[in-house]
Amino acid sequence: MRILIHGSELAAATAAAALASVGHRVTWLPHAETPWTALQEAGWLKREPRLLAQLEESREAGSLQLVGDLAGCPLAEQEVVWLAVSPGQRGDLAGLLGELADRHPGGLVLVNNSTFPVGETERLETQLEARGRAVALPDLLEEGRAWDTFTRPSRWLLGCDDASAEIRVRELLRAFNRRSEVVQSMPRRAAELTKLAINGMLATRISYMNEMAGLADSLGVDVEHVRQGMGADSRIGYEYLYPGCGFGGPNFSRDLMRLADVQSASGRRSALLEQVLDINEQKKETLFRKLWAHFHGRLEGRTVAIWGAAFKPGTARIDQAPVLRLLRALWAQGVSVRLHDPAATPALRAEVGEHPLLALFDGDPLEATEGACALMLVTEWKSYWNPDWERLAGQLSGRLLLDGRNIYDPAWVAARGLHYRGIGRRADPAG
Image (cartoon, rainbow, N blue to C red; front, side, top):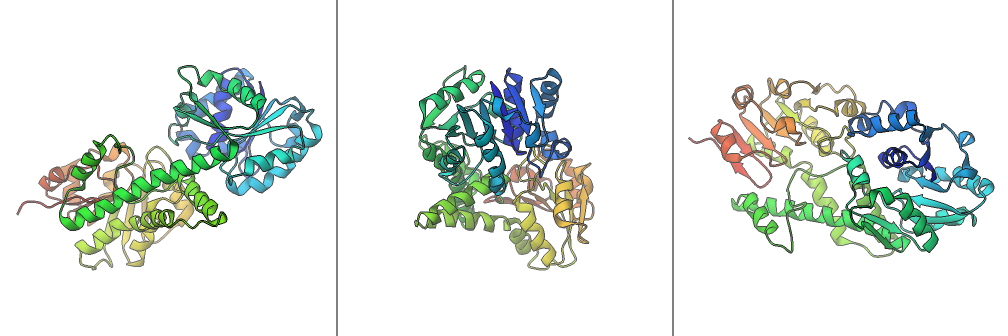
């Protein structure tokens, strides 16, 4: 098929790479805010396994063509237009849709792969002025493994109210739907709401587990026993039951706010969703509160080390990342921070600038702990899981490790002579 992909999101880059790799003739028009020259240098794209190499391979093979503006797009030839833009760029689509309405002969399928308000796919179809049908295909990619989740999907949510458009989309994705049937078809508005509802449920599980961790802390219970007991119940399972110091990310946080907007617009206030969002914001300061308690509020002039700034391992992004709120809390108390992250330091520097209380490191993680009284683990990069414990213990003057992701064994850490404080877990050195 001949496909035009528009957007500079991860979803656009992944669709361009994957669809071109299986023989479709793809024209990719990145959004003007982030042209191809900028995308090539984007840290998040460079870190996605296989993606950048596949894009270059498809360009060399001729199955992928990059264009910089609408003038270079053969719009009349396209069978499918795939939209993957950010919510803030929704208003920029009028030009493309107007050109399609003017220049396309008809029979087009428009795939809305963007996270827009519920009902937006229907509105997009009206702008095509009978030149085609619009379907919703919510973005379900996982950052850090986007290629795998597109090419070996566990499911596609296809919102479609037209049989011929559904046949076209199934053919479009046929190469990624051979092992088993993964396309779940439903009305357009149902698919749009389902995407938001999924992330709302996952966030609710995380926030509930964080509440249990706080309760376990106050009762002197190790929350890991609670987590394992809950997960063993087949009605609950283990997924998204890991307590932590808050979640972030451009898509997860954005979808929750979008779901809140949908609730508000419908006249149905969601006390549950408001509580989920509030719990998450509070948890972003939980390591600060543990630091405060350990040193009895005497923090001014101290230096702490932080491992991890990215909102999750495998990405260089810090969108709504817990580290941002944590840094503000520490700096407000006059605490100097030595922060290590293998990928996200450029993004953090761009966000906060050259702050006098911040030193950034991306080499040896232990270098960041020199001169620090405590270590805060915020992002669970694999390089942090097994440090040189003897060196670490020797460098932390306050001998305090604050584990925001519960990746360490409390007893092991305490046996190394360190005070361990996790999320619902704790241990102290003997004697």
